Image (cartoon, rainbow, N blue to C red; front, side, top):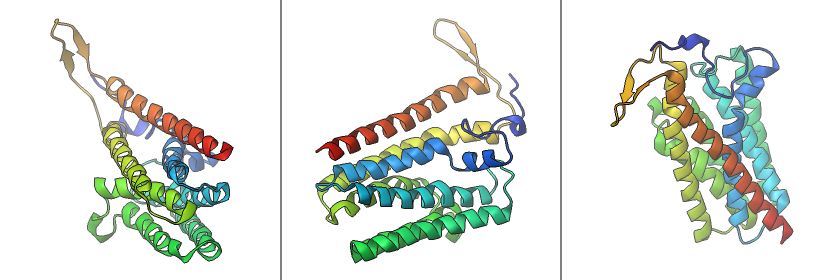
Length: 248
């Protein structure tokens, strides 16, 4: 069965019609940005000591680095979201946002502890290394995606709270690493279907003889349904745990 031409499909379920402010919203990847910021909150909530001001600082840094800079560089590298933002605008967004994230980190290192400097350096390197596929794409794979967008935000959120590494922080970071791998496994076939598939043809024959025609929508729906549920669920869990720590 034929599907809609690839160029007429939305490149993501959250993508708005191209143009103007809508491009900025689409560029932010709202569900995925919220998902990865939830890791920061989960890490912070697992720490023995909990400080709201430190959580807000690290959330702000990751919002700029992951939510804006990384996604602007990703759009610069191949236009996967098909926005109308110019190359200059994308470079400006990426550079200014990463600089802002580094500035927040620098302030935290001065005001709280120089122990944060290695984390700032790692974060500043991971954003361009992954999204621009530097060094021949050595950092653009499943492991580094899980580390950069899952384990690293969670561990940073945890460590920044009281500057001590304990098993709880490692376990939370490892769990977020695996959740990020699950996100990648679900989102990759969806991207293929939405952005690079010309037609979908075939049918599924059940053991009782029932025939189900395969369509683009039928293949995408369960994958995107899981992604939407996971992103919303993680935001709710992270918010709930932070509220528990605030109330203590």
